[in-house]
Length: 137
Image (cartoon, rainbow, N blue to C red):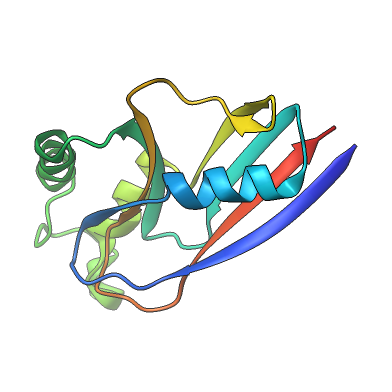
């Protein structure tokens, strides 16, 4: 079994936004030399998430609107007494910090319309860290 590790650094510009990681993940898998296995994409921040979905602009806006609806900023969340970003922590916890993608033939197995996104929930931020680890043979 072989494993490779790559760390991305992201700068975000909005409170909530989606950043397409598909090309970076594809590059990391291809450069790993691993033909068959899996790829873990993991955000190292509790106020962000990783998702797989279609990269159509209307849908991306819908995803952000749904997050705003389900985890509204300004609500009297208890954590807000500390640093006023409970909505971001809750959204991150419910969406999740990672995805695992199968690797076959040296490429990530994504569907025709699937893309990978970093979900910023508490931006703008600099130096957001995302880990891409590829394991297999």
